[in-house]
Amino acid sequence: MLTQCATSAVLFGSGDIVAQQLFEKKGIQNHDFMRTARLAFYGGAIFGPLLTKWLQFLDRLRFSTPTKGVIYRVYLDQGVSTPMVVGMFFGSLTLLEGKTFIAAKERIQEAYAPTLLRNWGVFIPTQIVNFAIVPPHLRFVTVGVVSLFWNAYLSAVNAQKQADGAPDAAVALEDAKAPEALASAVAASPSSAAAVLGDKAA
Image (cartoon, rainbow, N blue to C red; front, side, top):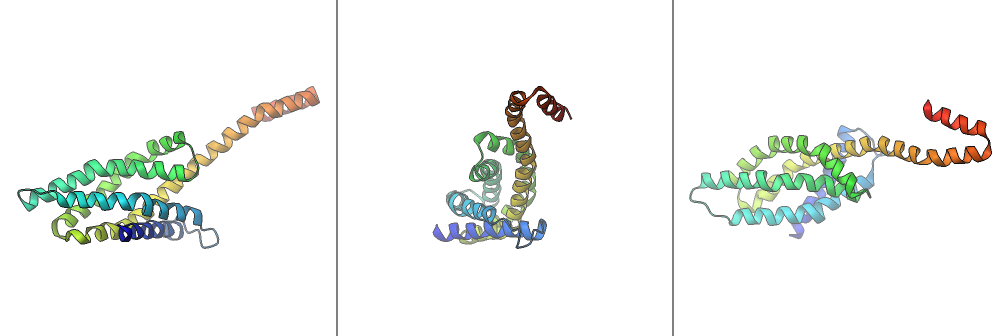
């Protein structure tokens, strides 16, 4: 278990590094190390243990033919586990960023469907090969190798949703300050109050 969790932490952290440096081209100076730490923590403390136990459960299932085994394992993995894991990813990362449950729900609603569809495009073929020809003790490694690039994609999507939410937060903060500014202006002079109202109208 510890080996798998450590591997998962490294893969998620590495995926974020790939996302920031290769896709977003931030450079070392602008690299968000806290973001990388959050991804590594999620991979090692949340995703790693769950994936390990899940693969062990799938390996224990017995079927009448190898073909049925592949079909049912892929179905359970991608039809039952993955829809929950995708939501868990965006919800967990939002909370680790210090945001609220409402913000987590909003991010899941925005990113869930397209991410799940792309996940199926990547991992259904991967898991067919994994369950068909890869020995059980190496299946975690197979998922991990593919996940390096998938995690880079997830990190980039999560960062984009985080950035998309920032302007809304700024607007909300400005709106919250407006009544206070107006009250101060009224106390100072009627002309100051008119100026504040004029700025808001503009």
